[in-house]
Image (tube, rainbow, N blue to C red):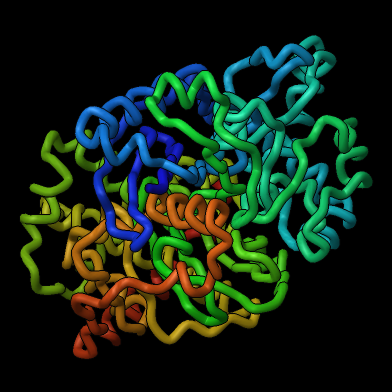
Length: 484
């Protein structure tokens, strides 16, 4: 048996698969986000451990015999978080998360240093790890002075599981300290933020062994024998392993808290000025590009909170048949935007409201706004040399057929729906655990799921969607001066 542990923003998911990659079961542990100030987003690393124990306990209770047969563990996690520990492995402050934008001044300063884009292949975004450390150095110097290791969230879990300081390429590519082409830490970039390689974890590929489960934890979990822990992956690369999006040109769209348009690449294709991420993949000698929007289902959940109706009820009111855009436009920049604007201070808006603008009209605008933000990502990927002819949809938002039809029509490409099953980050992590423990061929393991159906673009609405997208594109520059 092989265990995948996915440390998300809202919880930890534990998934058990067998040697044939059949899912045996899964369980969850919940997490909350602390937002002490505007633009801040933090979690206590101790809560990750508690949520993991909760998820493992739930899985073990349902499948005790199978759980005892675990031989490999793969880790997936939310990216970019700055987990700071001292020489005694004590956490120095709450982890600053991926969607925390406090370090936008520091990010701009680092991004102005041409070495960062040249070596990492990416803009230095405020959500990335390096500017967070620059912020800590400036605002919490007493904390910065004690930093012995900087770990990404899933790699803090690894420290608890194995006692080792190890990371892997896909997650580390989101720190702004990795030479992404060489797949190695850059001592030059670390020095630019007053850090050294000694403060970084060792690096392995996501498919490689990265420690073994501590004997006392194995005993506590009722597992005997050696349990290999794989390098694992950042959440999007792990989802790509779960979806089989590992070959050049394969792509998926993820509608989670954030939205991601992800394409696998057989070579390294950086174009930082497009605000497209060019990262290492979890498999050796493979890279990927992705565009990221910061609020996907988060935008619908915000609308749900304001209206007092559940997200499912709101999308249900739209029905199944795609409607032409109404003229009400929603900009989903509730916590800033990453691709293509790299703007931490822009905020969302409804434009074009009138007396007739009902709740249904606003829901439609929210879904379209996210679809158009993903279209922005597609245009950015195209400008960086990646063509996408179809995408597979994953994430909680993909349960809405209406939303997928809107995305298919906005992008002008078919959206495939995987057959029933969970092919997300926890499944991808479990696959990486299997590869690391058995030495199996990564390409043979990371196959795509069967397609259960395809949602084609609604050609009769293509023109109306194109007009609505042009309106959407014109609004960012128009409101930028109000936000800045």
